[in-house]
Amino acid sequence: MRAMRRMAARSGSVVRLLLAAGGVAVALAGPGGARAEPSVEANEPRSLGGQVAFFQDIRVAPDEIRRGDLVCIFGNVDVEGEAARGVVVIGGNLRVTGTVRQDAVAILSGVRLEPGASVGRNLVSILGSVDGSAQVRGDVVNVPLPLVPSGWSAPLGMVGALIAWGALLWTFFTFLLLLLLAMLAPARVRVVSEEAPVSLLWAYLAGIGAYAGMAVLTGVLAITVIGLPLALVAYLAFIVLKWIGLAGIYHRIGSAVAGRRGRELSLLGAILLGFFPFALLQLIPLFLGGGGILLGIAVRLLFWVFVEIPAVGLVLLTRIGSRPRGHAPPAAPPAPAPLVPTELP
Image (cartoon, rainbow, N blue to C red; front, top):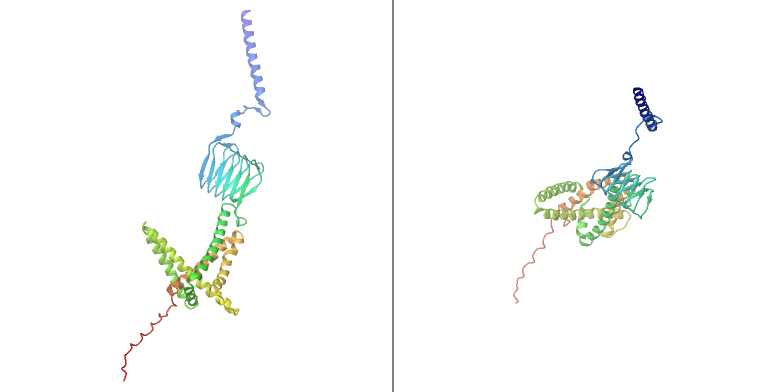
C-alpha cells in the first residue's frame, strides 16, 4: 500500500510539471508558433557620440541617437535618427528626415528638410539654399547666395555662384584700372593703340615669350624665402604692363568703332567702348545657368589666349608704350653754331 501511494504521488508531481510547462508554452506561443519575446534593450536606439568629419559624410541612422555635436566640412550630413546636439555643415549638404534637438547651421551648403523633420532651436543657412519644410521651434535665418546656377546643387552650385561673383567684381575692378591708366599714362596707351594693328603677330610671339619668362622667373625666385617678395613685385609689375597693353587694344577697338560712325571719342571714351563688348562676352554666360558658367570659363580662356597675350607683347615691342616698334628715337637738335665776334670798322 505504501509503495502504491508513493507511486501515485510521483505520478501526480510529473503531471503537474507537464501541465505547468504546457501552460508556459501556450502563453509564450504566438500565432506563428513558439518564439521568444524580444528583449526591451533590442528596441532601444543606439547611443553614439558626436563626430567631426573632413571630406567625409556623416549619417545618423534611424535607430541612432548622437549625443555630441556633428561637424562636417566639405561633406554631407544625413540625419534620419536623432541628433541630440547641434549640426554644422560647411561646403556640403544637410538633409534632415529625423530630429535635430539644437541648432542646425549650414554655410555654403544646401539644406533639405523632409516632411516630418524637426529642428529644436534655430535653423541658419548662410550663402546657401533651404528646400522643404519642417518644424523649427526657433528662428529660421536664410542668407542666400545670388547667381547660383539653376540645376546646380550645393556645394557645386555654391562654387558656380562664387565664380559668377568673382567675374562681376573683376569686371568692376577692370573698369577702375582702365580709368586710372587713362589718367596716368595716356601717351603710352595711345602708342600701344597705334602699334596694335601693325605688329599683332609679333606681339603674340613676344607675349608668349614674356609669359614663359615670367613663369620661370617667378619659379626661381619662389624657391628661396628671400625671393618671395621679389617674385610678388615682379608679378605685380607684369600685371601693370599687361593692363597698359589691354588699354591700348581697347582704345584701338573703340576708336575704330567710333570712326566708322564718323565720331571721334576721347581717350577714356574709346577705351570704355572697346572694353564693353569683352565685358558682355564674359558676363552674359553667367546668367545662363550651369552651362553658362562653363561657357564663361571657356570665353575667359579664349580672351587670355587671343587678347591678353598680345597685349603683353605690344607693351614689350613699344618699350612700355614709349615709342612704336622700329622707330628710332628722335634725333637731338643740332647744337647752335658758336657766335663769332665781328670787328666794327
